[in-house]
Image (cartoon, rainbow, N blue to C red; front, side):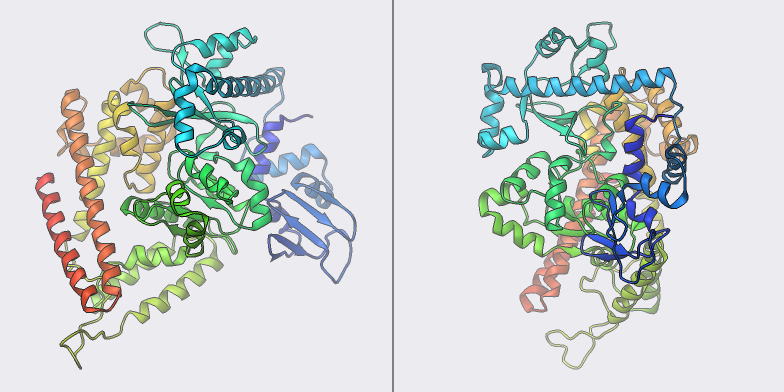
Length: 605
């Protein structure tokens, strides 16, 4: 029985060699590899090695070498089809029945690779024509030379149907161009039009370096600065990382992997000597992408802007990583100076400045501590009990028992350390109380009600887009930056998928898509009376203008709340200095927080 290569690649991507070998062999991590006693021979000195980054095992005592399939065949005495069946169950994927139609479909995937490769070459060529002069000028203005442009295969998509006509002349039919996401069919019956127009093109590749999709940056004004290809049989946005193929070897050689936000950041880091750099594709890191990072290195460094938005993005990544943590696998977090991204930093201050940022990366446990303690006083038994409850709830998300135990021990020690007196100017011999570094206004018994209200506003935001999908093109990028809990974030991601693939932005079609992907219950809660009661603009009967104004107000309110959180963090840093000047700045920041929260209340009223 034969299996599609894409299906075998899917299993390899979901199941690590160390996980499978570790069921037979007690493995110990040494550097970037695992070692253990040979499962094939009796020995006292370990000679069996496993390398997840390269996807193979090697036994020096027996000379046996292979991947997950060959290991299962060797140790379980199974045939290749039987090993595939076993590992497919382990990976949670269904084994396809290879029918004649399946073979046709696999051949079609190969054809799609031909299409994306041909399109990539064509985009590259356009950059060097008069039509692409604007794109070339943009890239050169960002500091890219010919070598960088060629290495990353950057190109340009001109306006009009010229791309489709050129590829058709190469024998590629329109149906393939549509399936590859290069053409989009309008809902008014007109001929398909190119998905990318008047944009600088960034090819996106799979792990093997094959072009599977594209990202495009608009030149001039437009609804979205960056867009990516819609999901296709080759491309799954939530599983793909930009520059992964180029970064693999560098990550293996250095043991370091940097994760940043965009294409240009990755390219700038690579040119500055940080070749092991990747980026998600315009959204927060997904669970699948985090697992992909761990195949390359045990503790990738996530680089975020030093502003409030960067901190919120870091918190989202931390929340998604917690349930996935395993012994030896975690994340580190690096913050850039305010107003800088990796591209601007290395161009303005050089690679040494970026190296300092990376070297200052903080472990995940410290970020979790800050998320639960910053700005919260513990000067009464009740407040301390509340903080301990919050920390326990957060740690409870860690699935691995051993990792969870060490998190509990470390954070409990830190919590105990908070109960210490602090002395300030004019208070010699007197306690200022037990508190975290930043003191905020006392929390009241409406805290839970406030949390519910904040979630309702976020539900109203998404409900408005579901009932009025015509607003998606205008607000999709802004909504993508809003902090959401995992359930609402799942809805947002599926709305984004719908926007990318839908031929017609119809509310009922979107609701059907969400019912199938996130579930009827979650959708019913989103569109239920409790959400729509105080958000008339979100209801289906509201006018498009009312819905548009409502979304703008909600986003403005959330932006102000984000500024309030930034001020709290700046206050925490000022208070931590322990100086008179630091305390004065702390008080000033607290005053600004109170003023910002007053503005929020007025806007929400």
